[in-house]
Image (spheres, rainbow, N blue to C red):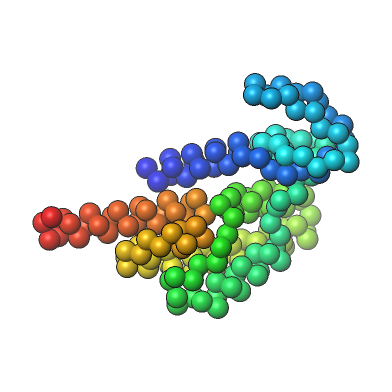
Length: 178
C-alpha cells in the first residue's frame, strides 16, 4: 500500500511545475490545458516531465535542482541534531524528486567523475534518509503532531510518519482492547 502511495506522489511530482532556463526556441505545444511557447534566453516554468524531455534535447535547463554541496549541508544540519526528533531541517516538498533528477543526470553522463559523484550522492542521501526516518519514527511514537514539524517533512516522509503513527495507534489499541 505504501509503495502505491509513493508512486502516486512521484506521478504528482512529474506534473508539478519546474523552473527552466530556455536554451532554444520551442513550441507552440498544446498540452490540453495551455499552449506552451518557450523563447530562447528566457526563464519559464513547465511540467517536470516536459522539462526532463526538453532538457534531454538541450532545449531547456532545469534550474531548481539540488547539488551535492546542498546535500552535504543538509546532512551536516541533520547530524548536528541527530538525537532531537523535533529538529527536522526544513526540506522542499519535492526533495527526493530533486535528488532523483540529479541521480538520473549523473547516470546519463557515463564518465568517471560522474560515477564518483553518483557514489557520493547515494552515500549522503542514505545518511540523510537514515537520520530523518529515525527522527520521524520517534515523532510518530511520541504522538507529536506539531504543524511546524510536519511542514518540514517531504511528502514521502509525511506518508511514512502517518503510516507509522497509524500502526502504533492500532497496535496499542489491539493490545489494550480499545
